[in-house]
Length: 441
Ligand SMILES: Cc1ncc(COP(=O)(O)O)c(C=O)c1O
Image (cartoon, rainbow, N blue to C red; front, side, top):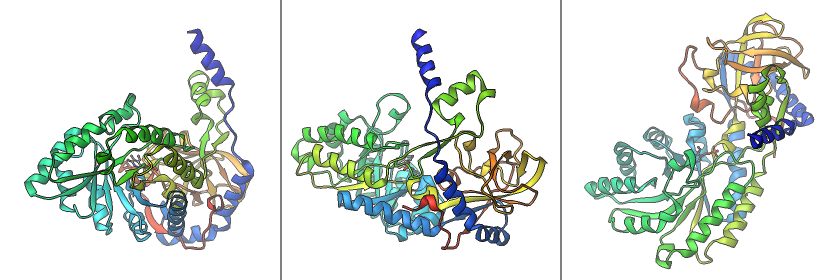
């Protein structure tokens, strides 16, 4: 008990890093500079609206590829469709020479429809129907097997059709807790290869791992070290089977993680102990690491820890790093119930989770523009009190019919949108001249 109390004391007296207000001001001003374009977009397409920034999406693709190509050389990049499954996002990235990382038969079908020529199919619990769909497109799909059972089922299905397919195996990065559901333990790798070799139809030639929510390259490099050690122990003939190593996604966007006080560890504890004391206007930013630094750290680890004559390509599966900055949300004030309480036409079913209770993003009034921040409960129109967009807005006032912008909502929002009570926003393309400045590398 004493130990717990000391831990709680340490947590409560810690101060999470504050948001860089100057940078935030630059970012909001850059949104305001383009207000007429956003206003025009909403006039033409209606409100609420997802505004897709194609130019930004393409530039993120270029920057990601450049960082990893310069550091590692032989890389292939597969966009993780789950992070934003708008078909146009996948199509644009395929045009940018990305492959696609899919995690279901549904995503596989979408990837085929947008013309992806290189597809990796990962994820636990693939059904026979999903494995059969992969076999239907065996010339462009690599199945990342999740278990011995999945290996046996794919072998059986492929055998029935006398169809060969390329495969890899996913490795568990943490054998404890809920992450153990993914892949096989590293210790089983040798046995997995031996089993796969018995199949005439499965060409097992790669490994995959994925770690999530990484502000620094530590999780990648830690697992790569373990993997390097294991690879050095593998017999040479098995090492030679490995033609790719897929390092997954999990690269945090350059903006860093923006949190309300309630989203920080000490805020979570305060929320239990004394919720009324939490400052709803406070905001924090956990710095992330530039993508070049991620790539260089990974490259160094590969160089120092992997067998010297391992001859394979490296795959990355970025999701949020690519799409986070490439979509924005526009909505309109429907009801001003008090100077500090407004309801918008969009509900948080547009993002699919109660994101803004913990995460911070500025709400920018484009109709009554201004950098000044005003305390105000900006809430959606769903019949739930958890339908929260934020606790302040930037502007000179707020009135019915004002158009509000919440920028950089591209990752894990559109794909999680819910058919719940209110209609979903439409989609429109943002003209190319819009440049939001936090986003510029
Ligand atoms: C297997 C796999 N690859 C890639 C990703 C993309 O991760 P992120 O969006 O954090 O880059 C995910 C996300 O859950 C995943 O499960």
